[in-house]
Length: 188
Length: 280
Image 1 (spheres, rainbow over the protein chains, first blue to last red):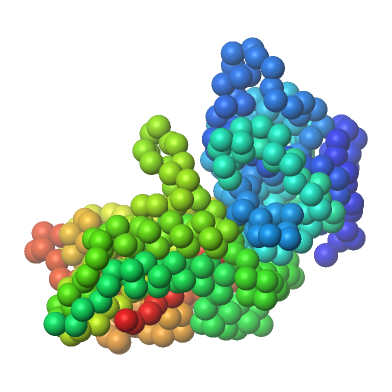
Image 2: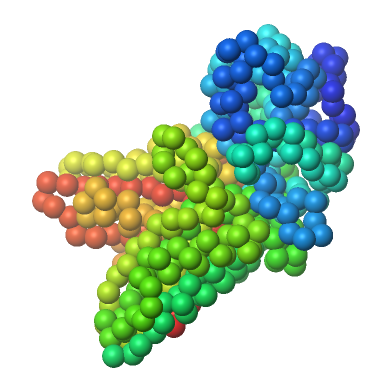
């Protein structure tokens, strides 16, 4: 594995340009959780020309909805959800300046094009490793849509959050490259 | 008749909801280690190590293995010599789910209406399957099912002429289409036969079998083995990032079917394969 890079949002164009498929990164700083229901509301606001509850310029969204925190803990388990469900919404947030997305699973061509156009990167976290990932969360604050419960937008302060660059601004795609490498030729 | 208060069912359902979500089965843990040793991709090995470590943290700290603590899918085998005392069975089960998910700090992932989508707030209702069986006992099995892998599941009404090859092609195509989405390594529950609805249920029920066991019929045991090899030759690997470990097991359940039909269903289960049972 390549040397670990540490990145801290807000990300600038040059930070994103520096990230390439296969890079293992530690994210330290602030990221925001949002999943299906929050994305729907955000895009409705964008379409109506209204103000968003937070400024996404340079930020990273983590597609996740945590379990409730047990007493004495800052957060429950918090692994990534399937990113593809956010594909219908993601390009509009990238246009708002969003620079990174963390989730699991491959993205659609509409997102790939928007990532190239607006210069953004897509990271994978390990799906199902939710108790392990929770260890990197230092603090949590709900910043919008509290009524959505697990789907509310949360501001997470993270330290050494482990992720891998899986789709970059150059059209690189670790899902396709990785599978090509290990697929047995007679597999059908 | 043996009398059992339904309160007892509520208590057991509550306990099992929490236990299933925090304590990964030994069969799955064993499979992580077995496949870790065979995995060729360094990134794949690292992901499997993370899953082993994650299961350890969840068990030690009694926190959920995965944030998606699932739809509470519950199977009850009710002995016909049991007389239930108290509130209705379904209400008792849902009360157990409500308490388990609330008091166990599990995520509430159920919306009341599929299109209006307002969260029920307590993870109810459960999906409840009841079977009346001989005897005076009740067996309760809880299998919380995550949405990501469920979404990648498929069913197809094949032609009888498609035969075993048709079923195998459908299973492999389903894994291929699912790709990185259902959190591989996955486990495949495969239903063959029955009706449209029965077939899907067979696929779900198949997932209750322990990993590492084979179908009792050698014909289907061979098919499970062949499918596992073929699926793991696809190269999808842990998290879909390439590797040998796409699936940890293939589990088949069959049922008689109509002379005109050959239904096949694939219920995809992520590596957080949870199921716990109790006999009252």
